[in-house]
Image (tube, rainbow, N blue to C red; front, side):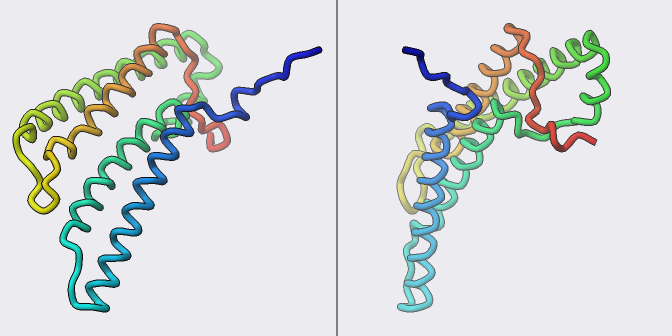
Length: 171
């Protein structure tokens, strides 16, 4: 009896499923909230005050969940033409890959420090309408910086080849 072959590319990971579910949930709640608010405002002359605050909070979370999910898939902006030129020079490509990962780590540190400062500022305050802790707005930036930073550090340590996910777009 043979074991089934598992193709990593064909079967999305749990990380992909979780991020897609979170993104769909955020988008669904935002859509329903805004739709109900529009119907109430134009149909009945009153709206839900919390709709705008909830939509803003969910949008911020969606942006950073999406950014975190895009990193391991190689879907962030990339200079594919530069990488294509370096394909013929393996040493230069290896050095450039390390430099890119170090720059990603630097960006994550800068984003993380700034987000942490905002989390601390929002620690004792609450949103005006819904009353949720204000630290929930900068928190996804901090979590995103930490997650991408860990992934970039792991790739740097493992010397993982640069996979931009943009193979078809190279000119």
